Each structure stands twice: as C-alpha cells, then as structure tokens.
Image 1: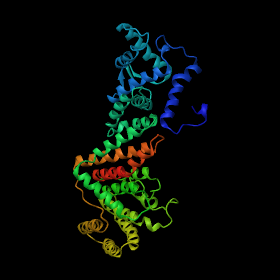
Image 2 (image 1 turned 90 degrees about the horizontal axis):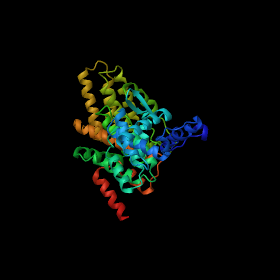
Image 3 (image 1 turned 180 degrees about the vertical axis):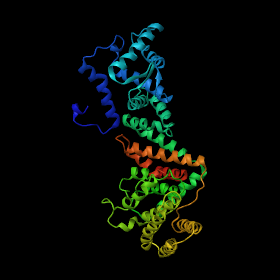
Image 4 (image 1 turned 60 degrees about the vertical axis):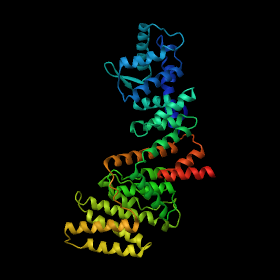
Length: 426
C-alpha cells in the first residue's frame, strides 16, 4: 500500500479497505493467479460481501476460530443466490469447499489453524469485515436495524474496533452515534449513579478553570472515584475529550505514582497564561494523591513522605485560594511529620484529611457503590470513552450531533432532558 501511494489514509476503515483491495485484487495480478472454477466468477464486491457474511456471523457468536463445515455452510448460503449457481445440495457443498480453499490459498485472509479449524488470518480482518456488514446495505431499513444491533453491543469490549471502523465507513455517522449515546445514558439510570453524576456536574461548574466543561466533568468523574476504587486511576476520557487538559497524568499502578508530581504539574503551552485559573483542579489533584498514597502505606514503603509532599503542594494551592483550608492542611501536615506516631494515630489524621477534603473541597465522598453499581460505572465510563474516540476519528458527523453529544456527555438524565428542551426552544 505504501509503495503505491507513499502514505497511509487517516481514516482507519479506508486504510483497511485499501489493504483488503491489495489482497483481493492487486496481489492476484502481480502473482498471475488463476482462480478456481466457482470463485473465478465472483466479483470483488461479491467476495467482500461473502467475507462480511462469514465475519459477522462468527464474530457475533464469539467464534474467532470456526470449523470448516461451519464456514462452508455460510459460503453455501451466499453463493446459492448468485446467478447461475447450482441448486443441487451436493454441487453446492463441493463449490463451497472450493471457495473456502481459494480464499485460504490465494489471499492470506483465511488460515487453517488446525485440521478443519479456520480463522481470519488476523483479528483486524475479522473486525473489518464485520464492520462492513453493519455499515453496507442497499436497504436503508436493514442498515438501521444493523446499527441498532451494533449499538446494543456498546458494553462489549471486543466490539470496540468494530464501532471505530463502522463510523468511518458510514456516509454519515449521526444515526449510529446517537444510538450509542442513548445506550450509554441508559447505563447511568441507577439512582445512586445519578446522584454521583449530579455531584460531578455541580463540582465541575463550581471550579474556576478555562477548560472545556465536559473535560472537567470527566476529570472529576475519575478523580473522586480514584479515592475509593483502584481501577479508576486514569484520565483517559478527559484527555481524549480535551487534549490540552494535560495536567493529569495516567496513574495506573503504584510505580506510576511518582510520575504524577513531574508530569501532572507541567505547564502546558496551550493554557491561558494566567495559571491561577488552574489552581482548583491542581489542589484537588494534590489532595486525592495524598489519600492514594495513604491507601498504599501498608503495601509500599516510603508512602508517608509522599503524603507529606502532596500536602505541601496542596498547601501552596490553598494559600492562593482559601486561608482557612491552608491552616487546616498545615496543622495536619505538622502532625504527620512528628516521629513516633502510632499507626492508629496516623490513620486518624488521614481520616481528618478526608473530612477536610469533603467539607472544604467537596471531594472524597464515600459513595458506597455496590459491586453491581461499580460494574455499571465502569461500563458507562468505557462507553463514553468509545463515543469520544469515535467522534475524534475520521468519521463524518454533523455539527449539530457533535454538539449534542459533547455538551451532554457525563450529565445526569434530568440535565440531558433539560438541555434538549432548551435546544428545541432555541
């Protein structure tokens, strides 16, 4: 592909399409391959449609590896409807076997992994042809049905690449993106999760910052949950939505804690020059980091000093914001510095820190989510991240739909409905 054009397409669906074209068409010409009797009569479009049918059926069933007989049945279902195809079952069976062997031997798209067991040669091809089946159909009604089916899979991680490819294939991704947004919002309908989203909205609007409001909501979504649940330790959604929000560095493991101090506080050249506008976000980050270090005290040595360091950063931010908060943090830090404190006293002091965070900064709430609610939150977060990644991909989406999705991301249901009503009036 690179030899032909000297570059790669930015649209991932177009990139894979070009690759498939090389395998299905250009490779044949270069190698002077003569097709088998039945397969020779299939046009490029028919070959892709056939592969798409096999891909979608096996992918939806979760079968990355499938038996030869299963593949031949899918091929038989397809070729029996083609002009001039034999209707004799035995002839169809022979023809299907020939087609399967032709795909395997000539294109490199199919591989026989073991005797009678096949798969696509790479998961990329399996995902690409599956996406093609969702996106391509001459009947608009069938396309809508297919996209509704795809949107219902938004919580299944294995469909992530299929979504990204499908939005790039569609002439307009508006319908699918709206379906995805609707499915995502359904995940947040739990009452306690709705209360959490109300807090996220209120907290994000209370801070003084120049950043995109939705990016700030994503920031506090992560930040507050990071105190209670280890798997919420990245700022992927905030960063995907607004790349200039680079004051937050991914903190995925204990070894990554040290990166926060150096990376999270590095000024960005894209920021507004008045750095005071960012102190609210940084102050809350400092306090959350202090609590996270406290959680790690029993697992990793030297965390006590890290807590002191984080409180020092917080003291600096608080001195520019709130004298009363500064005094509380100073007293707490002075006590934590005392040598010989028992573990019980230290734990009591850290409880005081959490109380201060809750009262003065409205962070660090103990939401007491159940295991089921935690799982819903994770699915909701991942679905929002996928939605933003689709928006950021090279897909065609109208300005109206983009605005609707971006401005209602991570909002409670009542706020979304109010936004739509206001938008309708305007």
